Image (cartoon, rainbow, N blue to C red; front, side, top):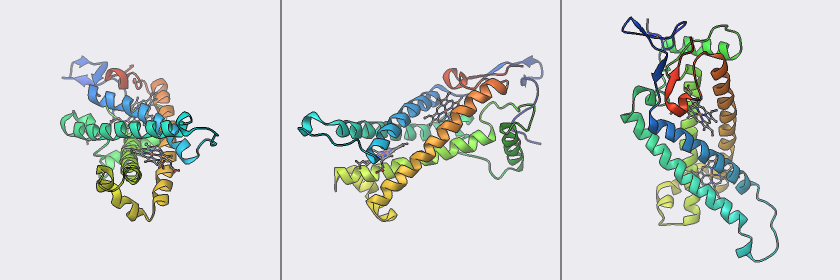
Length: 235
Ligand code: HEM
Ligand code: HEM
């Protein structure tokens, strides 16, 4: 029977050699991860203030351009996030098979669901011994795949709003102008764009908790794996 994770010892290669580390995430994927982390932080902080602006101050607009800088930072980080996302999707085609894990989630596979529920029990402290995964575990896989879809949603709605500012004839308006009509109005797009941000904030909180928790409890490396690319199996 096909299994995704494995129990017990580190994996055996060619029946003889016990390996303690495996190269998993290639450099472009890792670079994308950390660039996305920085973009998301900038986008969430600046986006929050775009929706709930700072009180206006008296004086010449030129000398009080705070909201202008906040919006500029948002749009710059938005472009970086979007280009990163395109690069990540490209890497899913040309990278190793771990680069496809968050694109192709095997939801049709019974064994995968069994391991999914095992991981839920493990996260709830109802299992004693962790399963080991070279790539993502099924719960992480589905969470990260959802994040990818939300990112796409943020880019589509973000560039639709951006196109309103740059106006008819701009590339953003031509490519994404239809999104405003599809949602109903500009305010609807603003609201969905903002609501989805809270989805991302929730993902990040759970994700960072899980990464640190697994690093401590699951007997396999996590955070350093997203830095060096290697997964270490600790016994
Ligand atoms: C804005 C914050 C973050 C976002 C949006 C984010 C998003 C993601 C995504 C999408 C993946 C899947 C990578 C792929 O397969 O292409 C991932 C993996 C990972 N992230 Fe993050 N991440 C964030 C912050 C962090 C932080 C702060 C840490 C470290 C404490 C971290 C540690 C990891 C690890 C260890 C993995 C690999 C997990 C595994 O091998 O199963 N992430 N992250
Ligand atoms: C994860 C990514 C993103 C987050 C968390 C985020 C967050 C936000 C938030 C909270 C708002 C305020 C909504 C409101 O209440 O009116 C906003 C506005 C906006 N965002 Fe984003 N955003 C993201 C990605 C993008 C991208 C990729 C673009 C594309 C350039 C973009 C462009 C805009 C624009 C044009 C506005 C409206 C600005 C204004 O009305 O002054 N956003 N964003």
